Length: 200
Image (cartoon, rainbow, N blue to C red; front, side, top):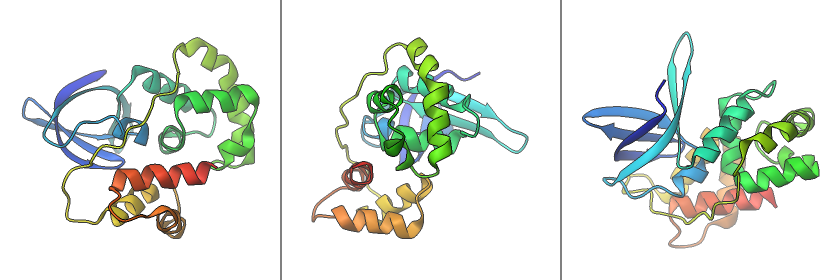
């Protein structure tokens, strides 16, 4: 089991991340809550990881905080919730906000996350209540937008691609980004603003 990686960031293209660890490039997927905390391309970072082994692939997920990894693992135990949905949840709201949704039974907020319908939201509330109390610190982390690094695509197309990868339909992702776009915004700022708008 790969539990943690220390290395240099080679590429950032949400939700994908390429990390160089002593000459070996590890491909990871990470929620936006982690991307907001990452340093620039070329700098070193330490990430907690979760490895999923399937018949057709070995998938590695990276998290800036161990609390987020614990929440991700708890979400995977909920019937009908896979890794993609768990990443979407951690990208759409902070772990603290998610905890508040579960404790208050706010299914309406959960339904705004792509891929979550009313039944799945109700199942999350029921199954996660006990699990959250065992996770310990799932407090809110402040998300400071950080430059994703130089890439040939525009910030708008980067943001739309990231939202699509998180489960939003392409036309919805485009509408969300266009609705918050302002001159000079980085792709990460666009993603953050679009997700915030979707949650309100």
